[in-house]
Structures are given as C-alpha cells and as structure tokens.
Length: 108
Image (cartoon, rainbow, N blue to C red; front, top):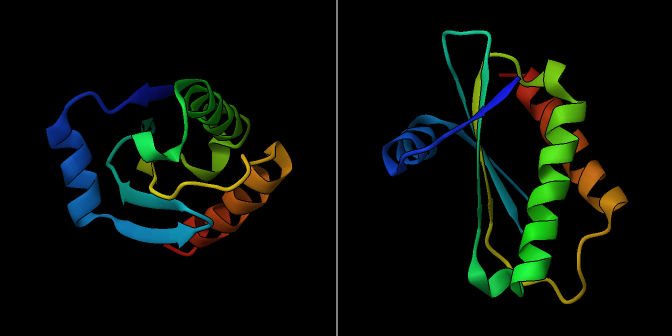
C-alpha cells in the first residue's frame, strides 16, 4: 500500500536527507524509513506543461510505482518533474527511467 507525503515538512525531510537521482527531467529523492510502508510524494512544476499533461504524468508515475512496490518497501520517495519536455513522456520511456531508478534504490 502506498501512502502519500502530505505536509511540506515531510517533503523537505526526504529532499534534504534522502539520496538524489536525476534522469530525463525527473529528480528522485529516496529516504529509508523504519517501517514496511511506502510514502510517495509527487511534485510536477507548472512549466512542465498544461494541467492535462501534468495530471497524466502523475497518473503514469503512480501506476509504475504501484506495479513495482517490492522495490520500494521501506522508503519515502519524492518525484519532482523540473523540466519542460518538447514532447510528452511516453509510458515506455517513463518505465525505462524508473527501472534505472529502481536499480539505484537496490544499492542503497
């Protein structure tokens, strides 16, 4: 089960203390927690695109996280989109970015 990071304090804790990984306009911050749950926070900047694109990107990220829960058990995770893309992410491209991130998480 994926819970969400709700307060800015939670986001800032993960961002300041967590491990950082940057790939294809996305920044991943991950921080180990002492429980068996996963906490997820997603921040998509307005300059990334219009509301429809930002919401689609959030849905795709949540879908990929839900499919790959076993890689993230015991982590708090923040995903930040900081870069405007010339063309939107295709789902396959996003999956490749997340696969590389999951390999990195295993090494923590």
